[in-house]
Figure 1 (cartoon, rainbow, N blue to C red):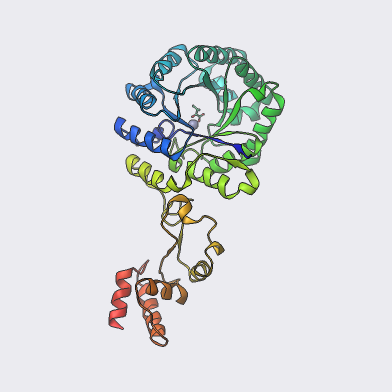
Figure 2 (figure 1 turned 30 degrees about the horizontal axis):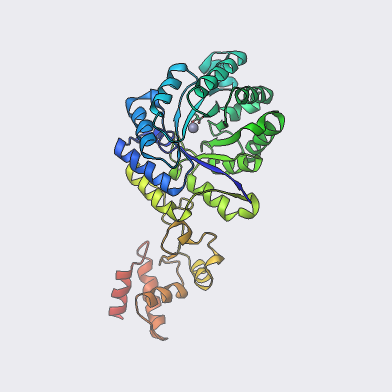
Length: 385
Ligand code: KIV
Ligand code: ZN
C-alpha cells in the first residue's frame, strides 16, 4: 500500500495573514466545513492568543468539525499554550502547534537567546502542551536557513523535542530561501541523523518568496516528509504559502515518482479555490496552475488541433479531476480551422466548403480586432455570411 501524506491546511492561519485579508467568523466556519469535506487531515484554525477572533475561530471549529484534527498555533510561551488548550477543549482531535526559531538570524536578532536557551524553552513548551493534548506539533521557525547555518543544532533540537513528546516536527522554510534539492536533503538528513526520528511525522511548510514553495514541498516529500502544510490558492504572508491544489495534483499526477496518497477529493478543488478567492478577495491569476481560468483553455491553432484529436496531447490533468467542466477552446487570431469548425459544430452549424473557408477568412479579420471571439460574434458572422 502507498504511504499516506497528511494534508495540513493553514488557510485560516498563515493564509489569513495575507495583507488585506480579514475573514469573519461565519466565513471561517464556511471555509472550515469546506476543508473538512475536501478531505484535509488537519485544519490550523488560528493563533488563539493573538486576538479574540482567532480564539473564537479555533474554539468554534473545534466544536463544529468532528472529522478532522483542529490545530491552534502558539509561541513557545506558557500563556499561549494554555490559551490554545482552552480554545481547543471541545475538539474531537486537538493539536497544539508550538515552537520557536532555530536560525542564527532568529536566535541573534529576534529571540536574543543562545542555542541552549532556545532548546530548553522549546522542550518546556512541548512538555506543557503535552500536559493538555496528545498531539503536539513543534515548528522550528526559519529552519531552512537554520539548517544551512548549523545542521547539528537542528538534529539536537529535533531529538530533544521528540523526547519531550512532540508527535509532528515542522521544518518550515519560513523565508522561502531554499532550493528543492536542499529542502529534500534537509529532511533526509534530519531523519537519518536523529536517533528517535521514527517516533514523529515530519512536516513541510514552505513560503513562496522565490516561487519555489510547491517544488520545495515536493522535495521535502521525497526526503521523507509525510505531512504538507498548505493553503488554498497558496495565499499567505508576502508571496504566499505552498498551494494545496498544486501539491495534491502533483502527488496525484506524478504518482509514478512519489508513490504516496492523500485523502483529498480532487474533484472538489476548483470549488474550494473559488470559495476562498471569493471570501478573501484574493483573486486567482488566470494562468495559475490547476485552478486558474486558463488552466484547461487552449487558444493556439496547433494546440487546439492537438487537443481536439486527443486531449492528452497538451493536457496532463483531465479537467473533471479537479471539478472543471471541460477543456475550453478559446477562439483568437491564433486559432485554426479545426478549432473554429469544432466551435461552430457545438453551436449547431455545419458548413460545407467553400462556405466554411469564407467564414474562416472573416473570422480571422474579426479576431485581429479583439482578444477573444465569443459565441455571439460567431452567430453574427454566420448570419451575415
Ligand atoms: O512560516 C513559518 O515558519 C510559520 C510557523 C509559525 C509555522 O508559519
Ligand atoms: Zn508560515
